[in-house]
Length: 284
Image (cartoon, rainbow, N blue to C red; front, side):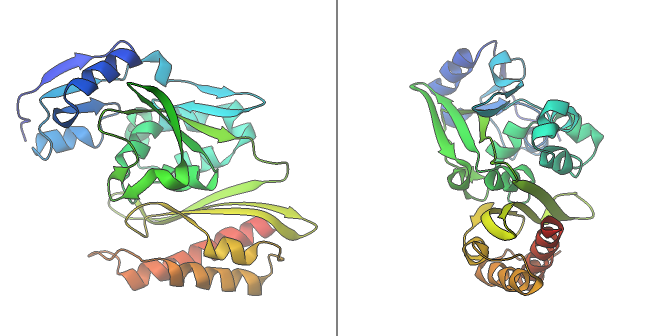
């Protein structure tokens, strides 16, 4: 349980961190909250030559709400997202999701940017940012670029981030009036991670679904935006029959993971159960 030797630098700015990372991206790791990296170092599953601590970079912190939208710095902790009254006045789903993450120790140190960049297939925030139609702002040597959240997650622990890039912030467009969101999950009893997690946003007009977005985590090898169930429900009432059909579609079209705790068939059933519960809650 002793890490291999490494050099350590506490970066004072985003530019410095990018410069250090660019020198040797394959032999360098970034440290934010550290809940994944530190155990990996102790077990020598990761042995970087250099560890860059980005925890003090002011450019990566803060929650900004404007007419244009919402910007959440990558270093914003789960606890800060839970506690922010302005943010939760705009989007209560952040408090709802943050309350379901692990335990107080993890929520006080873990960051939303770290969770997204790590891309654990059972993490909570990926499903939420997908349902919010967020963009992931990425910083690199050539400036900033943005990637839609639905395209950011590529595979297990794999994202659209290049080795010499840093996740800087999450950009969320202001939802249209009447848009409501919910996040539900079935927790693994030991880890607290999502066996299946569903984030849904729905806007009704005259009782008919005018807009819907569905983010799924825990079920597959990475978080994803569902299109089959969303397309089916668009333009329809959120009746029990339509909800049941949408749940069936989502369960049938997801290629689910299988492990010692939950088989692929079990996860597919949980998807159907949780999307049905989420949509019924949003229909009332």
